[in-house]
Length: 341
Image 1 (cartoon, rainbow, N blue to C red):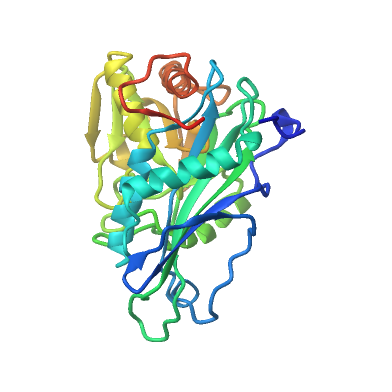
Image 2 (image 1 turned 90 degrees about the vertical axis):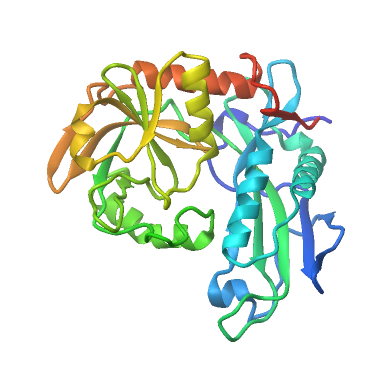
């Protein structure tokens, strides 16, 4: 299919309406067969559970054009599994994994002209999401839900290359112990927006959230996991029950150990030990890994030796290897890549 006439290298990271999206409804205790539709608008009852009590979960992943021209996605089975776990955590009916994967295939094939060409740095962002569509006035789960998948072409998250970020240790809490921090639910992101805006107004790029119980251990930002590199080139990532299990982070750890031969450690990371690390990065779907150059904690600057000009050497190797796997220039582990077109 002929590609859309778009300046792929200058589209930015924002929503662009595409041709088709997938919709399936849960009614009378089961999911219907689902279908592709053209209308991008969602019509729901004014008392729908999503509007009243924020019953919603979502995922984010990308479709890529590889070096040999295939259109693929990266580990979508893990997105399907995580969405099922998130749904269970909010008392929503999980959307079956195989149907999740089939829906992605349908949406990408129907919008293949919107998939950016190889070498442009752009990708097709996929957003599967599920919400309570049935009317609910008492605080309880809805009995009707809608699962949808939309897609939009996006440019590189950091146009012109990733520059190291400056973070502040947030005065706000992101997630409570035994709460919903480990679920990919919209309510968690809503809670982080005020903290994000506050940080930006103070001149910072993002927040570093600490555990809400003791406020001594690093957790994550509003939308990404942390990854640290020691001065001995060991990879350390925070461990906590209230951190969202990032697919990108887990993939990075595999790459570090099995491709780069580095030691990988997952453990609680105290804020007091940040000055001992050589590099710091934020892992997520949008940017893959974003370098962090500085963290400010109550006015005290913690500067990583990797500096404020570019990614540190280990972070760069992780980025290059993982993006190479996604784009087909590096051999992928078995099962990581799903060919769609």
